[in-house]
Image (cartoon, rainbow, N blue to C red; front, side, top):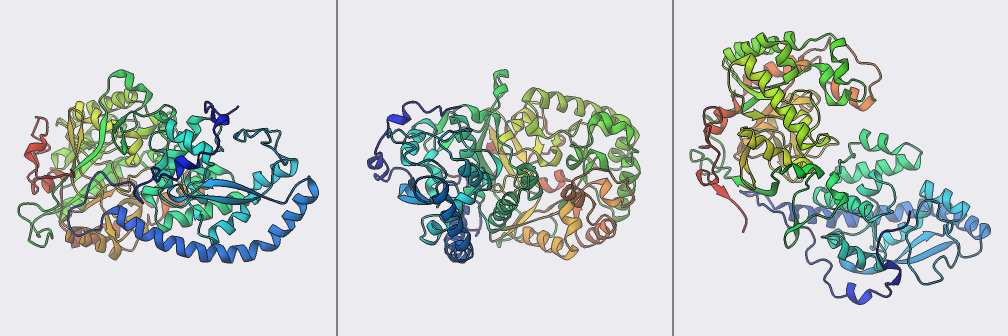
Length: 605
């Protein structure tokens, strides 16, 4: 397959276009929202990290170059002996802010591969690649000399891959915002290269562009370390998907990136929309309007007063429902597993009754249909009910039509069992991400008034790391919905999650530290737990990947005792009770659409 870039072969000497400084005017994309309080804006935090990263990587690159020099010398000799031409290959590439430099690689093509002066992408089975070159490319050993570019400060170890000038000029005109990837130093390896194969079409470039910008917005030390580990594992022969999922680097890419996105204003694009938007589904804007973190009854310091509780939430599902087991267990298999959700949930209810705590229970529709008496007991004991889908499918793996149907089926099952209205929602595995924000508008359209699905961290299956732990309003084109995200206490560039597997893995004092830290910044914490997490004797599922098994089983034997301790040291209540302290419309009894005018909002100009 050849590159679908019209007339790219006729483009020559585009340097004048690149040298005008129009490719990048700011080191990082400006965030569409600003967090209240004393926290430093994310773009400033990341730019500070990047400066330190570049210095460290130049030093590390120098050390790696010394270690790799003997291997590079041997490969250089082999390339010289194998085919006519030099051992190294120099080619002009576009780097930070459009500045051009010469990239150094081991030669993998025949000499004069572009003797006609026409630039061409290398495609699968390209006859210009030598037999030795194919081996070097497959093992990525041809990239080793780029450590020279790292030492010179022209490249980083991790970042978007640098492109040729002629391709940049054309791609800039074909893909909206393509130049934004030039806001950081290019890298030897990157999030796009770890997740996707080499480019062959414009659509391939769009998908990699999405991952490149995702890396720029999420960049942090832990992400860079994992990408370097992933690159090393790939060099050692491990399969790509195994590497990305085991290290939490797998990223879902919206189907809508196969076509160009419409612009909404300079520097931004509309939120990714599924191809199923032909159903006239409303699009949720990427704009975020934040509710002021300081409630009318907060102290002057912004710290929450003692009478404002934290939210205690339970995702009512069984051990075989979890997303980490979905590659081994499908809904057709659920009936063959012994159910333990009823007994485990009742044990949780007894603990909450003993501690005099009410919480919000997000019910799986499949559970509600099979155990209606359990759901009725939850409601009768004064707990708040929410919806956790019916089939526990990840939102971004569904179409809007499928999501809407699943939502209705689950809501009917829960409301029939409990006899109360359900207007709160939490997606399975927090799977409302940037690629599935359209789901918020469907929720609002079906009468849901509060969502708790956007985790402000980044993991392999979920997360929007540039979001916030604060309660805020998400505005669609015609409707709005309140977002109460799970808590991730921010310490500098680090975020410490609260609840679930993080609670089981971490010592209880760290969870308490995160809760206290969130409250000091004016954010009431949200804790979440699953009934199966207090069940260390649950059956073990065979054939599960090591990382998924570890995530599921770590800390099961101590969760109940830690939970008992946590309830003694904190004040918890339902989500609605917490939000009432912020003068939000009552999430249970209010049936009118939420108006932004009724909230104290802060938004950027």
